Amino acid sequence: TLQDRLAATFKSLRGKGRLTDADIDATAREIRIALLEADVNLGVVKDFIAKVKERAREAEVSAALNPAQQIVKIVNEELVQILGGETRNLRFAKRPPTIIMLAGLQGAGKTTLAGKLAMWLKGQGHSPLLAACDLQRPNAVNQLQIVGQRAGVQTFAPEPGNGVGDPVAVARQAVTEAERSLHDVLIIDTAGRLGIDAELMQQAADIREATSPDEVLFVVDAMIGQDAVNTAKAFGDGVGFDGVVLTKLDGDARGGAALSIARVTGKPIMFASNGEKLTDFDVFHPDRMAGRILDMGDMLTLIEQAERTFDAEQSQKAAEKLMTGGGKEFGLADFLQQMQAVRKMGPLSKIFGMLPGMGQFKDQIENIDEKEIDRIEAIIHSMTPAERDNPKILNGSRRARIAKGSGVEVSDVNSLVNRFFDARKMMSSLAGGGGMPGMPGMPG
Ligand code: GDP
Ligand code: MG
Image 1: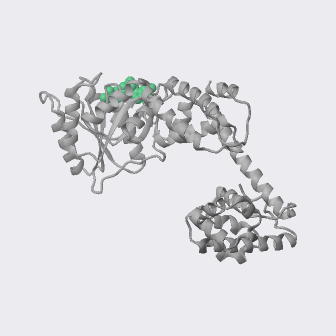
Image 2: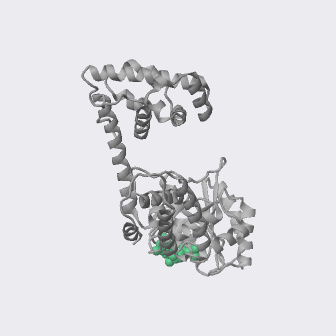
């Protein structure tokens, strides 16, 4: 696996300078193979790797992770980003019914999805109606009716024996029916062919035109791998869609199609289907998919653990240093490190609020917001090491230089320095008075 290969490529080098080009290239090569094995489109892989390499070159070597882990972490973050970051929810119409149209190739899983989606929506208190607008395949209407029955929802279908059906007309009638019978969601099932087909595209585009759906969902089989890009492009151009549903994720496909489609169309993947049962369905989780594409869930867990342990060690060290005086005086670098460690643990005011004896500083604490920490970070980064160790040397011209370097006002630098001296005084008085119970064991 990728995990083994990466482990073999690297000894556990830690914490010096920047990632070397050799580290980056070696890891990028392995990631590239992993993505191709996951059936990600070659063009997409190339773009992706270039982006990751660029980020890796800019990254400073982490003290918590070895270079391979660090690059994998970047890869994972980029994957999650392309796959949509946060899950996107369905958009409901201000005035019901909300119209959801399903489009995709034959066999993609549209009809099955109609039932899954209906059941899922029903579970959330909606009252969906299915519309049978696949009049291409002889049995398609019946299939949707059966799926609807299983999901416990009604299906709108053309009258039998009504000659050759017109799917656009049926779609229109279905909208009217949904309004009349007070269904708040209408799910339109459409026909698909085996390959990309101009006539089919036109039909889907006409249905879209006639019903103005709130969401057009492109349904695609995760197993089709490389073809996903062309199919998605064709549907994007021919019909247009707002979101993607990946089906058959219960198969052994690693899900490269997801990445290719997301990258090429820029549309969010909204749902995932993973089986033939109506309950085999969920909203799409970009992070889980990224893990699946990389095929190294264990490695990602290890990375998280390594970082968390490292953070805990750092804050422990800082706390100990504080308590004991640490031989060296508590400086601005320690101040920053503490803030950063604390920030990772949650909203600041909450954390400080939990510390005994901190009640008296309540106002001051609540005034620290997250943006301010960014500014503090920038200011401290603009100082020389000597200034960080011994802020007493910060005279007017040094302060002006720092303000310029970090893009803030001199008054911001002054207020940080004053706050630092206050904090140091406060800490040493607390430490002198028997220490701060619970400080090293802050919740984390
Ligand atoms: P449509 O032509 O797009 O309407 O596709 P169907 O809904 O008829 O599905 C085609 C086939 O794929 C059927 O045999 C479904 O049972 C099956 N199918 C649909 N979704 C999934 C899924 O998520 N996993 C698996 N294993 N099979 C699925
Ligand atoms: Mg169908």
